Image (cartoon, rainbow, N blue to C red; front, side, top):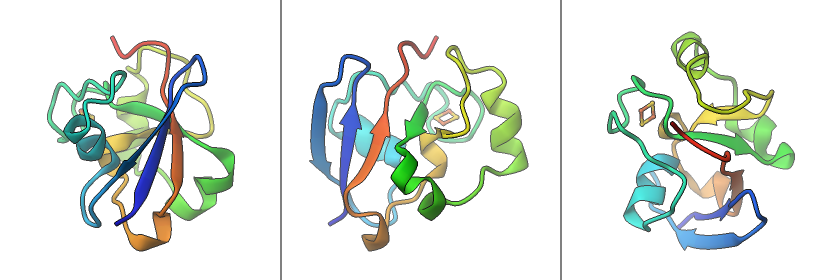
Amino acid sequence: MPRVIFVTPDGTRTEVEGVAGDSVMATAIAHDIVGIVAECGGSMMCATCHCYVEDAWSARIGQRSDGEEEMLESAACEVRDTSRLSCQITLSSDLDGLVVHLPDAQT
Ligand code: FES
């Protein structure tokens, strides 16, 4: 079971157990993580699942798709090199211990 650590802007860390094949967004919603809204339910139409992948994990996550890149333009908070839509990150055993930081706001 890949673990995901969500870090709020004030530094609070919450570790949850995810399921391989699920998205980081779905994992956040399943564990009532405040800060991931996911208005569109994961169809890459909202950018309210924006997160910042911790630097050490960025290379393992891979690149943003063109569609993801476009949707991030409507994110409520600053878009950084490590910005991702959490609905587009699929958990696997390779991502056990993944750390994602939550933005100040999603809307
Ligand atoms: S949940 Fe809407 S873009 Fe990710």
